[in-house]
Amino acid sequence: MFGIPGKQAVTMTPKAAEQITRLMNSGGHAGLRIGVKKGGCAGMEYTMEYVDQADPHDEVVEQDGARIMIAPMAQMFLFGTEIDYEVSLLESGFKFKNPNVVDACGCGESIKFDESIGQQG
Image (cartoon, rainbow, N blue to C red):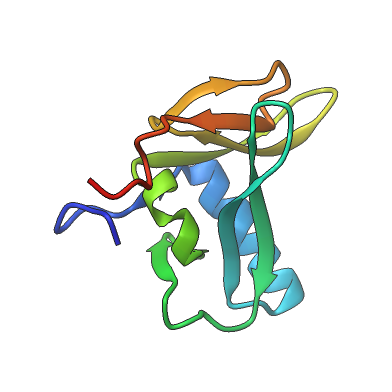
């Protein structure tokens, strides 16, 4: 993982940890795997899926009973991200506060990273 010793790759707000724990418990899942994929108007999109077992190459982050697995190809893009869970009158969902994002579409679902991330130097 691209990280700093003693610091988690991603963090969760208390609301996000509570929602992830609720989702894990309701479905009997081991956690949620987060990643990124090509798509959307800005070039990349976040992905989330239930998992019953961590992949050996996943970065596992546990906080307040919640467990997130970070897919190997996404680890460099997600380092330093804070995951929140917001509820409003019109929608509710996870929000990613990612310091690696340089641009996003108007809805915030599609993102663009600095092109130097992921390139060998």
